[in-house]
Length: 456
Image 1 (cartoon, rainbow, N blue to C red):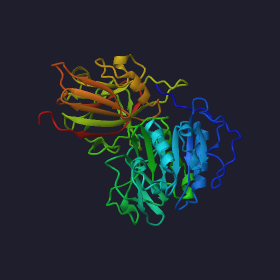
Image 2 (cartoon, rainbow, N blue to C red):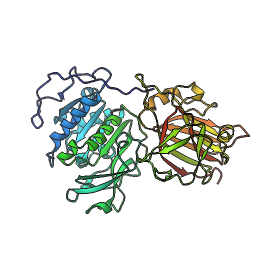
Image 3 (cartoon, rainbow, N blue to C red):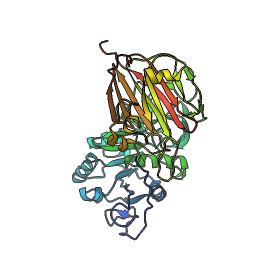
C-alpha cells in the first residue's frame, strides 16, 4: 500500500536568487540539490513576458508554506535556464504560477516536453493559461488557453469531482471571489473536469453555461493539473484555495493518485442528497452526512439499487477506508456488488453476483480490486494506484457481456470474464456492502454510463 510521504524539508542556504532578479537556475529551500529523504521536490516557475500579476510573490510564499507543512521541498525561479534535462530531473512537479507570454525558448521547450513524457508533473495556476500560445504541446498540457475575463467578482464554483485531492475537501458548491477566465475552447472532452463555474452566479461569463475552471489529465506520460483561480493576493491566504492548490500539487507530483481520464455521459445513481431507488438488505445500514458521504455501519448487509437492473455499463464511485494506525494500514472491509438478482437477502448478491473487494489487507483473491474469491487484481499495479486510508479512491467497474474490468484511480487492475452458467453479468443489480460493526468505509458520487449491448 502506498504510504503518504511526510518527510519535512530542511532549509539551508543556497544560491542567492530573487524574483525578478535571477542569478541562478533555481532558489533552493530544501538543501542538498536532490530530493529530501523520501519526500518530493517541486519547482515554482513564475516568469512573465506579458501581464504580471502582483499576487505572484504571495503564491510563491504559499507554495513554500504548503511544502513545509506537507513534506515536499520547494525551489522557485524566474530563470528559464532552469529548464534543462538535468535540472528538471530533480523535480516531481513544476508549477507554472501565473506565467504569461512566451517564457521558454525552443531548447527549453524540448527539455520540458521530455520531462513530461518521462513522467513529470505540471501544475498550471491562473495565467498559466495565458502562456505560450504558439506551443502546441503546452496547449494540450494546460488544457485550454485564456481568451478574456470580466471584472473580479464573487461566483459559485460547482465541484464536479469530490474524490480528487484538489477538490475532495470542498463542499459541492464553493463560493469565492476571483478573476474568472473565459477560455478559447471548452476542454471538457479532453480533460477531467474537477470544478466548473455557474455562469448564472456572476456576470460576464461567455462559455454558454458549460464553464470548466479546474481540471486534470494524464498527458503524454505525465500528469497535468490546472486551476483558473489564483488571480488575487487573497486567494493564497484562503485555506480552501490553499487546500485546492495543495491537492493539485500532490496529484501532479504523484504523491496521491486520481482518475483524471475525461468523464462524460454519466448520470448519478447517488449524488449525495437522496437515496431514492436504493434499499437496505439485511442488518446494518449506511449513514448519510451533510457533505453527501455514505458511511457503512453494522452488517453484514447490502445497500442495493432497486430502481432497475443494468446490463452493459460503466459504473464509477468514490470510496475511502478509515485512516489506519502508525503504519497507515487498515482492515476496513466493504465491496461493490454487481450482476445479482433483486432480493432483500444480502447473501443473494454473494451467491449470485460478483463483489469487487475493498480490503487491502486480505489474500490476493480477496483484496482490494479483486473479484472476490474468483480473480486477484494485478497487485503491483493496484499498489501503485491505491491511496492509503483516509484518502479517496475511485473505482470504475465496466461490464460488457460477461466481461468485468476494474480501474482504480484510472489504472486498470483487473480483467475477469465470467464462465459460470449459474451466474451472469448481462443483467443484474448493483450494491454497496456494509460488512460489519467495526468496518467503516465511505462512498461518494455513485454514477453510471450505459454502454451499447453486445450484438445490439
